[in-house]
Image 1 (spheres, rainbow, N blue to C red):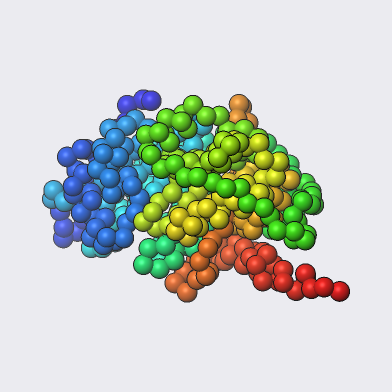
Image 2: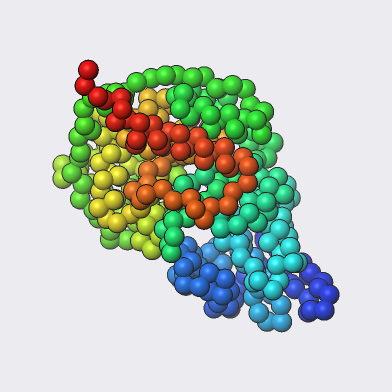
Length: 398
């Protein structure tokens, strides 16, 4: 990567200048103090809470970690992770001290890196971010930078309360030109695609109303018996040597390193996940299986992570495999977001769909979301009701 260099001085009336620059290892303690100031002890992203992970990110060329400094105090922080092979980036961890929020530091930091990695250096084709919903500000910030609204992660994190996050993405012309057109979607996913399509002006999708073995819910989905392996280095090393196959070749999970393996006693199925014990969040990263039904695998892993006290599990599936989408829905993983161009393979970029399953009672009392995100939430809740409540009325004996 070309040498990173970002520095900007913000003049402030009545206050000292604020310098926006790349973070240094010497800033680590002050960065952690800033997150503690804003979030108390509830912040759960390991790259901030774990000093070794923070050090590696600050020193790594595949991260841009910006800080805003005023009189020796870190008053703002923002991280961009880059995957140069897949040409993706994720922006996260934006935080600004309360007394400095009138200076638009979050916007300035976001734009500095966004311009550098997409236009100036052309390092990535797309950038995505997840925004919290405690207030409208993060959603309006990404909107003002040209990010597209892609969906929601309902009740995805559980700290003091259940938190719902929004998914948003910034797409370069290069990303959209390389996009594989005409996704093949089951009917239940089409409303999510249409909300995104109206923002980017795609062609219509092909609708494939495939049915699975468990679609009619006439029989219970059988469960695989999983054993859990949580030894961090073992999981990491085994994952590096593993190539996802079968159903798992159609899933995608960027910027997550697994810390859990679920494996059947006969080793016929091996699933890699990232779990966060603090906020009860888990995602499927990859795996391999000899099982013929992906619905069986998903139902089984959902039951296992629920037993491990996870409140949420997520899987991202490509938009060209309707039978696998159907299996996910049959296992009561509900679609909640549509992510164009997410997965890069060869010279093409492939759309993906976010499916998730929550084990807590849905709670949106504290959610503040702007209009289009409400449309995603309505579609999600409609499907949730059909698969968790209305189902009982369809299975009455004649």
